[in-house]
Image 1 (spheres, rainbow, N blue to C red):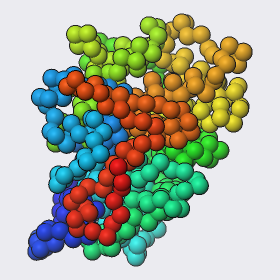
Image 2 (cartoon, rainbow, N blue to C red; image 1 turned 45 degrees about the vertical axis):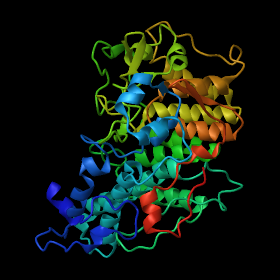
Image 3 (cartoon, one colour; image 1 turned 90 degrees about the vertical axis):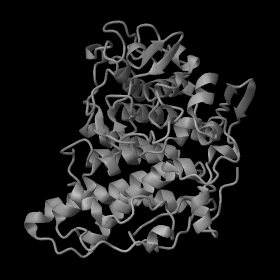
Length: 458
């Protein structure tokens, strides 16, 4: 399938409308896709579309700025570039002239999706190819929506219904044309496009994927549930989490997972409905499990009979590092999984004061996470603050999945008042709730080619 990648004359379009690569003459030997199978093969390149077996595809800057980990002074000084040192301490002036993978790689994925959508737009599909055509088109729509969502968590403001039509969104690249004019539009535009693309994909995709690296109807429901949760639209988030769980509700029993394996969870496990990985290079990132350690408050929040304590973390001296990725190794899972949907539905039901339903979902998850026979289910009478319990379990279950940054943004907007702190080289750094530094700047290289583009103020 990899021969089809040659149609992409540029692998890192970086969201820019012009650059030196435009001077490159096309190679007449390049393969031009002409069949539905050709377009599907473009999307089946797991390296570019899912980040598998490479450097990842989901931005890591959010997790880098979050509070699930810390760096020792020696590791901070010895292993990280100035860029990532600035990221770790939430500097206001964070980018200089570096190429920013967290921008380039998602837009590269969007570029490939747009190649497929452009190619299929006027495609004369025959009845025997309709299913293959639908899968390719639906997949491309999903990949584009997924990357738009991920980019919005890093480079756009926290969603707020009252201000979304006034705040800048991200550039929505909707064609594969390199000279497509870039503008940011509004945050409302961004989320409307994420929802539109994902909804359009639902009718085109199979209910469950042939491979977990491919999109599906269930994955679309998961992306919509996550998107609406981010928007604080709890009715819609609950609806789509429920739609997901009606089709896919399997949870692994952690009692069956061997804690002696360095990375206990298999890739493509029973909870993994859409597999993709967080960006991890080519430079070291601070959340690299070999170079960072788990926040002690997070680690100590697990009960001793909670199996996640031994499956997610391994000791290294007096510290612990993360081993609980659903990617089967050190690469950090950033896909869509069943456990997240239980927690989304539980949170939404708690916010709607459907306490019994919320606790049913929470207990269904946790009974699979504790030593057999030791979990005591939560009850309405014995749980005075159900929402807080669910939010704590959300952090514990979904740590290091590129979700915490989004949670910090939306929860602080709702008044949770979570203050982040770093101590490094004898100096303390703080990130206050709703600080402008919860939005990363557009990379300098992008602004240099698009000087009219509005920059995020930090």
